[in-house]
Length: 251
Length: 199
Picture 1 (cartoon, rainbow over the protein chains, first blue to last red):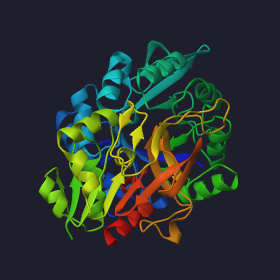
Picture 2: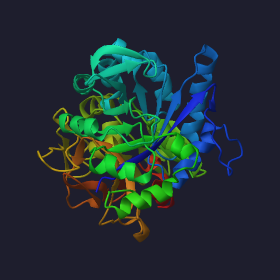
Picture 3: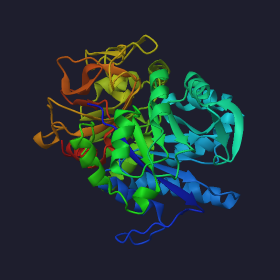
């Protein structure tokens, strides 16, 4: 049976992992390649690397980093951050990325989704959506949830699918950082509407939250960052827990 | 050992090369007919669309060369599909090495967990046959990304199950193929590539 996926997300700035990551068994705590390889060894099903570099120099470093990741990592990985045109995606594809994730640039220019899907195939294109509930309307936000747009979550997700997105990575800004669980009602509604896989993000605090997001939120994958980085949840423990709860998982 | 990866207009060629390098094998990526014929092993990878890729293979004469090869050949993903007789994708006649046909997944409404196309992610392989596999690989998870599949037939060397049973691997004489991506399938995938190298 097709397994539900567990995906750690790493934020990268100027080629280094950011956020306090306190692993003891790797030589350089800041090195995304070592950290990624360690997660792969622990059973992560995929990895996401998000470039939060603002400078041109940092961008070049990121493409070089993607090449190193592709050489070392034996599982699929997605890269995102700062992709606003075809040539950005092309550089990352030829560096060895399996998928790219676009967010604000797709909101600003939805045709980018069509162009990327046409050039590289739908399986290459992940559309990330950050949304927040404003008075009952789930509103798509950009710039890390700070700026609301005129787009509504569900219609935007459907449009992204129609334009050629291969997957949706949905982050609820209302749940992100709360550690109180994923946005299961919204995820489940989205799963019923779409034919492409959905990656759930935002709100993971304990192992039961992952059970809920697969069983009730109908998500295909669960993504988290800090709970893995701070070792609050170890991936092998999480995967055994999920498997014991009857969730299809790769052990 | 002299291992060649066939170079053509497809994605993921570097990923296969990276995986071989992790196993300590240096491959040459080339479209040169003489080099391909002279290689000990040949890998035919592929991510892309069937009809445009077949058109490219014809243009390069690779549609005649590949079925005539005598050494072990491993097709991956689209490579497997193009080695079959026909693909529904673009209604494309393919290389005809395997008689199996390539069809599109048709999800049935209301099926829990398995209604999405492409089939993307980690799934198990069973009923393993051929030198690519050993008993330790039965029921292990490997990584798939595909919307089309080869039917189960005489040459099926591994069965996958998504919406319906399909050929996760095929084998006939010196020709081997996997629908999944061994180069992205962790240690299990590395073992399968290693088995191919040892053939």
